Image (cartoon, rainbow, N blue to C red):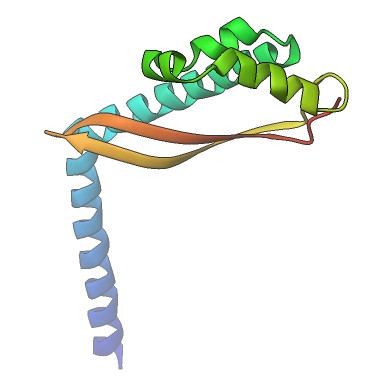
Length: 128
């Protein structure tokens, strides 16, 4: 019986050691740390920009909201008119929100570098 326990303990210890070696290689290689730091930086930027966009919405800053779109969209659709229609369609002014959620929905890599990243931004319990 004791031999069985020693074998199980040895096996668990062996698996734990292997796992620690792989984790150490991943961390020490820098790839994991660099990716985590980059993702943290991007998440902070998204939250900061999302807060700024909400300020544009709250202040009815149609010019700044329109400037968020690419030139192709600005040239091929009347974005400023669409924002005016949006503000006419809501009841009252936008004042505040309770919670901001930023969720990554898609990412694309090319040659190991992040080339495309999409976040879903949601303002919960918007008050007007």
